[in-house]
Image (cartoon, rainbow, N blue to C red):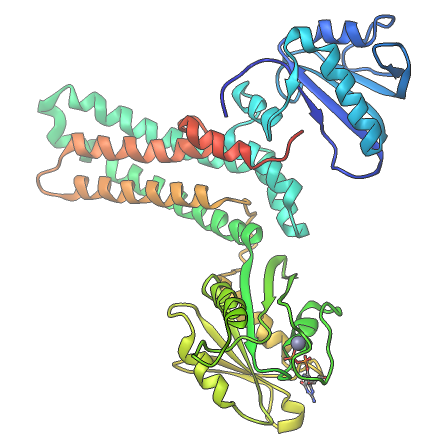
Length: 459
Ligand code: GDP
Ligand code: ZN
């Protein structure tokens, strides 16, 4: 995204029909735009003014509220104008066209995705982690995810990251001051308790990492694929896990032709479940069309965080199951589910084996489903710690991990007999850069482009 500071406008509400819809504009100085749109009225900043919205010829497009925020007291830190009209796609498009036309001389153009929030970031209204939390709050698929996103948006995550940065800077300053006086280097590590300070930073970072990693689970969820022969009860199990009828259950083999994807939640963690009906091992006996479908399904299995392999406990495995198991991608955990224990007479239970964890349950009678839920949470790495969680992104976890690495190297340099203070200081600097990239104090422009381009237009 090029850095272009010309005024921007976009429809800020979701597409479709709604009670109200909002067209938003932002720019360093929107007074010419406001004067062009409302020549007869003076808009008082931060007051809602009820007005007709007219086109250039004076014909009324809609009536609604105009809200005017003067820089820097606005979402973007620039002048912001919000026009709240009726939420119809046609009327909003007409209103947006009118705004663009009225601002054309001032260079007003359509906003790019995420550009409002990007400006808020560039004008120090939000740091980068908060800006990302705006998108994550909008996209949150569970209540727990939404709560953690607001936690990050309010700056709680940024605050703890910032504290880590401060502590790292303090230690660095101490070390670098000593570097200028080589004769004092020898005693420095003892006198300043540099090792103790470093340990304090590492411990604090571990805690932040834990909260962020758990929060990331709320955001990313777990990708689960369901495989098994026709009629073993895949759709029934999906329904039992979801607690509602999301897939068709019939006694005719092969009813579920297309893969059904459903997101359900267990303790607030989204589970993205794909029912890979009809998967089989690829052999020479299948025609091209079927082969393409099956290859696609195997692609799905390869991306999974866990494979649920369903079998009929009253019948035992089929030959096809052996072929499927042989084709499972290495490294993806497998839960082997023996369904229909109401028919087979097995007791519900969990048996960890070398090849997979085996779970005995009945999807139909909803017996043993909680055992499966618990196993899924365990695989996801979910721990109920009661700590508040930050809805972190993979990017944040990578930065925290790398900062941790650099702090470990720093500890190595402090521990060696031939202590190397300049290497110690250098590792601290690298750790600091990683931490600062989370809040955007130190973030390359191309990364900013990627982050903001994933927003919707109008955000
Ligand atoms: P899919 O083809 O693997 O998706 O299997 P379905 O979920 O469509 O189930 C096939 C048949 O098995 C249906 O008649 C289900 O009611 C039945 N079924 C599924 N789970 C159980 C179970 O736990 N016990 C019994 N007795 N029947 C089940
Ligand atoms: Zn099915």
